[in-house]
Every structure is written in structure tokens, then in C-alpha cells.
Length: 339
Image (cartoon, rainbow, N blue to C red; front, top):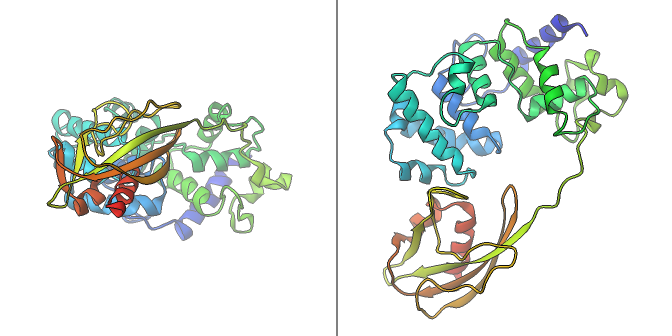
């Protein structure tokens, strides 16, 4: 494989066709703000660019620097994060911002190793910030890069077992020339051309080197191992409204699923849950059920609703609907509709 020619072709394509994103500097526009790069990469984990963009814009308006974010109250950040999921990332976001503010004077370190030492920063995020913000020749491998690499080299090993091989092969294409643009070019190619189901090979600048294209079935790569069945859990959620129209919420434990977030009172969630015990005595009525899918399991929540009082965090219903994680918002909407 002629790596210099391949790199030149992809970088020329990126110069002409790279995406315009809220956190990105296009070629020739100067270095991007490391804070914005880091924040975008954390938000983009496990979600899409269109979904993450309004959150990014809201965060950077409210907390324009890493020091501003570091000084924010935990509850404010967690509420602003609601809807992005994976709430451990929001806790890690705050821990990292506070470490940068207190230990690095509000300035992100500029090497992959130093970035990796920050709380909550993994190998991918450290490499992405080092390459994009600081022009370090780091090997940035996300799902898009894995897919492009698997097709370029027609890797037959199924993922996830193939990941070390895909990382090694992606690293063989990294060079000191424009490492930030190279990382973003691979991401953009995977997102817009070398797509999961229907790769647009007629628009790809890399077909001359692509073994997957040569095979006649590039969509077959990356080869996927059989999917494990997602387990199912069930539980109950209670929607309690007082005479002022406020709803009862609780603060979830700091550790665990949806840790530290506001939520509805619920029972335990399990494969065979025990009969639910309401949090207070009230005239509870059945309000149906809601379904939600987390990364590692699916959930059915039976919703019960009532008017009443108790020792809870009482929040206006309209405010609660915007602040709660998706699963609780679904349950709250269902409960309120029954009252």
C-alpha cells in the first residue's frame, strides 16, 4: 500500500468535503480550543453528531471555558447533561474539568500521556485531543476509523476481537503531517461516505487502495461477531403530584446507573422484581408502562400515579420534564397524563 499517496488523497478530500462542526476549525483557520475539542469528544461518545451539537452549544454558552465548567455545581451540570445518557461521563467531565483548573491552571496538557492522566480521560479521548488540539501524531481510533480501516485492509477477524489489529493497522497510516486533520478526515469519511450499511464507494477517495472495495462486498466489513441477547429487567416508578402541581423526585445514589441524577421514586429493577412497595400511602392508580433500552439491558417500568405529599424533592412538573433522564421523563409523562 502506498501510504503517502493514500494520505494525500484523503487529506485533499477532507480539504474539499470535511464537515463544518460547532467545535471544529477547518483547515487554515488555526488551532481549535482544546476545551471545545475535549468537550465535544466526551459528548460524542455513544451518541450522534446531530444529537450532541445542541448540548455542546448550550454547554459552551453557559460555561465557555474549562474553568467555568469546573466551578459549576454538580446538579447544574447533571441537569444540563440530561438526555445525553451515560451519566458517569457527566461526573467524569466535572472531575476532569476540576483537575485541569486546579492542577494545570485551567490549561489542558498538550501530550497524549499527560491527557491520559486526567480523571475520566481514556485512550481514545487523549489521542483525539492530542491530535486535533495540539497536532500530535496520535492514533485516533473511533468506530468510524475502525470501519474504514477494516474495509481498507479487508480484516476478516470479527469485532470486538479485531480491535487490536484494527488499531495497529490504523496506526500504520499515522504521520507527523497534519495529524489533527488526518484524524478528522478519517472520522468524516466513515460518517459520510464509508457508512455502515451502504458505503458510497463512488464518492470515496480511497478506492484505489481499498481491499474491501476490491472484494466487491465492502459492506461486509467490519465482520461482526454474533450479538449477545440483551437481558431484560422490570420495576415500578411512582409519579406523585401535590396540590401546587409539583412532582416528587429523589436524588439517586452517586454510584451506579444514572448516578447522582434526579429521578422518580422507583422500586428495584430486576429480572424477577419483588412486588413494588409505594414510597408513601396514597390513592395510587395504574398509569400503564414505559419501555427503555440501556446499553446492557432493556427495562419495563410500570407507572403508578397519585396526588399526595411526602418527604421528597418537589419540582414543578414542567421543570422536571426537562431535567430528568429520558427513562424518567417517559414515566413522568405517562403518570401525569393519568392524573
